[in-house]
Amino acid sequence: MKNILQRLVNHEELTSETAALAMLKMTSGQCSDAQMASFLTVYQMRGVSVDEFIGFRDALLTTRVPIDLSEYNPIDIVGTGGDGKNTFNISTCACFVVAGAGYKVCKHGNYGATSISGASNVIEQHGVKFTADEDRIKRSIEECNIAYLHAQLFNPAMKHVGPVRKALQLRTIFNLLGPVVNPCLPKRQLLGVADLRQMRLYVNVFQKLGMDFAVVNSIDGYDEISLTGKFVVETNRYQMVRTPGDLGLPEVRPTELFGGNTPQEAARIFDSILDGTATKAQTDVVVANAAFAIQVIEPERQIEECLAIARESIESGRALATLKRFISLNQ
Image 1: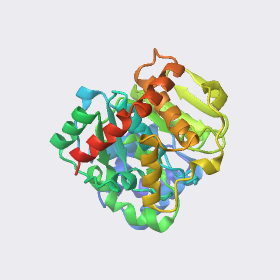
Image 2 (image 1 turned 90 degrees about the vertical axis):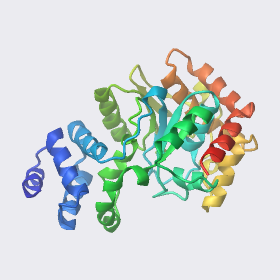
Image 3 (image 1 turned 90 degrees about the horizontal axis):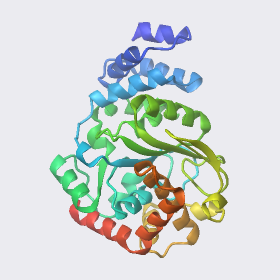
Image 4 (image 1 turned 180 degrees about the horizontal axis):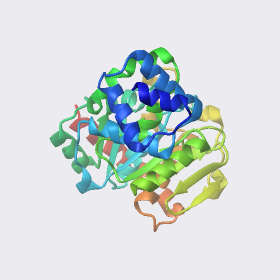
């Protein structure tokens, strides 16, 4: 590790193989806290290359608890987090809308770090018990189109870096890696990022991995399509800047996306969207994100058609029925 740190101090970029070696050393307890802190700080100061990022990802995936859901070819819908907006659980809600529309979803998530309610928080509020049992997970995706993988059950190596991450009190490379280490290795993903620099990184990574994807960013700093103004969408087929009006939707005020002051309040907002009692702004934002996920799965569809499919999932009650069935299968 000393030699690797010296290379970084000399402003060298690591190969993917060396990056993977460094990550394995950290996550297996072979590095001191000072070495890990130094390593993580370098990447906060200068950013990470695509090859380094893929090396870090590959290393973390070798230590994961593997699960094979390839027969379902599911999509993951996730945001990087850390945008400081404390929105409600937009991407998690979109997962149930997409599943309600008949598509397979495998959501990988964790407890909130910078918001009141992360994906695991809102799902746990419904009495769901997290599991790494492959049979139970497959039953869930077969019977209600969605499975949830709680990150802490599938990434045991992360415990070695946890204390250093907490002590640094900074976002680190691990925050960026979270969205790309889904243990089922999905080939489809809708990813929301907080800035355009992150968008470029993930687009290059997804292209190298040969994935079907859409990376989205709201220009005012949301790591999802917030409908609060212009937003950017980049896929393996196109890149464009769009407005809410382009989707036939009104612009949303930031206050309308507030996620609540407690996990319980966040869960009530989540439920209101799926049961059809939410505000138009809350529903529209979820529909927009679900629509672009559907287009990743079926790229031949126009976004207007995908919006209609997503909205019908809610209005027909199928999204809510999917949530209820998911809860019954995962208690």
